[in-house]
Amino acid sequence: MPMEIKGGINIAMKVPSHQYEAVIAFYRDVVGLPPFEEKEPAKGFILGPNRLWIDEAPHYSQAEVWLELCTVDHQKALGHLAANGVVRCDAVEELGEGFRGGWVMNPANIVHLVREPDAW
Image (cartoon, rainbow, N blue to C red; front, side, top):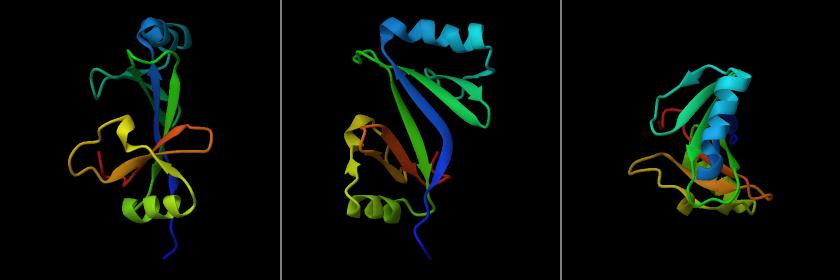
């Protein structure tokens, strides 16, 4: 079976504290996206077929966008990515014991979570 990686539905936006409330208000009050609060303290909004998670990042100087990739075998996918020169960056955020996935960066340093679909 060939290696398969697909885009996930989750997009995370890591926002510095000095911009956090304004970003929340933008999506909630100006754009009017429907909110959800599944994983406090993160705030989220329904973004079409996707979920936009907005996390306060007190030590950041500017916002970052993180993306999700899904696969049926995270170890095989992470091995495939490593064999193709993709940088692992598991230290960016703890995923917890037993989580079936890991963090990588694309060549432009955009963080991606590679995970198995039922790993949440």
